[in-house]
Image (tube, rainbow, N blue to C red; front, side, top):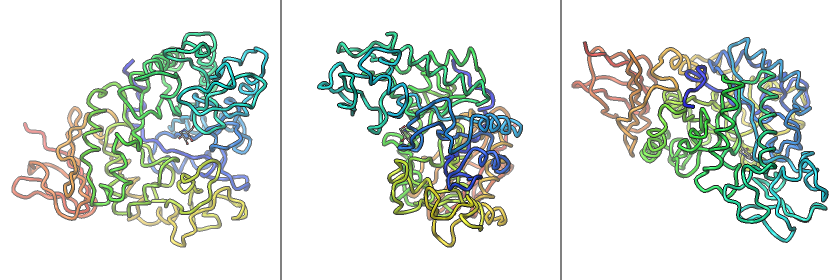
Length: 517
Ligand code: NOJ
């Protein structure tokens, strides 16, 4: 189960939040024809794959993570035919497309849930986690009660309107807790496989899986959930061996054992991801500390190397924009890091131009503080930054009001822009196999306060030294050979002194190390 589809070896993903990307029908909300229109843009940047946030029928109380029909594109985005065309047009350009699978819960408006609320037994009675009395709550979960003729309480997976689908309990302890292999939980699992089959047969290339660790209840160490995903992986290997799966789990030792090809490194405490870009003193801001990140990364990386990929995103729809804490110079170094680490990098739409977190926005579609990271894409200097022809008041989220808000058009015109730096870094990654998904990483300096972050990437025939120094002083990092060759630098770059590589303050450099004869 350890192999990954070959296309992941060099994949660079672009995350598209469809409601905020490109509106082609002037209703103030992005749509699938809008995504199709921008495929050439994504190619031009150099990305090779897309993760599309949920685009299925939904009441949009949680931006589409509250699905009411898994097999229907939300009318505001277009039709299933548009999705089919998106896959075909993407493939024509060598791009792969992952959809967002939300297997842990549905909207409370999903017909399955409505059926399961009925007192009389039916096909969907066991589709969700229900207790057997309205007076009993499911321990450890929020719940919905007093809403149905059924005498029971439904467990909730996230927001109150997202009832938990029933994949069973690892250790059932109460009569209403069903075992993982009971008919109800098995039917839920098969229903989710059918959803995957539906989209994969239509041409999608895999899934980002929402809250992948949440499926089996009362499951310490996620043993049951891992077994469930192994079964899903076996199904994929049989029917869709090229399909790729990336989990929202952020514990690669578990998720990759479950058969995921990739897991995200997310801003949860133990990963120290936030130390890099998002604390009050982030490492890439020049006055932080990357060493706990390195220690925790190694703890996840060392036992999983060769089993799958740990993917580091520039950001996503749930977290603050990377530009909220970092200026453009710091963003360049951040992208030099993202494009030289193992795993497939993910670029959140707009991060390639340093789109800002829009402060003080009212919550839209259950975004709350996340709304500021979800504002519509800024394409050019025209009305609504080229996102939509709607009246500005009709945009479903207001845009960054700043007069100097970054746009794709302006940055494409300026060779010195962040956009060109990101494009250059992606091209460099593509040209140097040692920098791609699988070759190992070895840390030489772990970015303690005042020190650079330095690591080696190595594959057959190529050893690359990566030096990243956001600090105020120079860093002495590693022995140098006169024939070592710098092939990427930003800031003042690096130089050799007394047989050592020295990286200048506020600089990054990638060096191809001379192979001793
Ligand atoms: C994680 C998603 O990324 C987030 O946006 C959503 O609100 C929750 N899961 C619930 O599905």
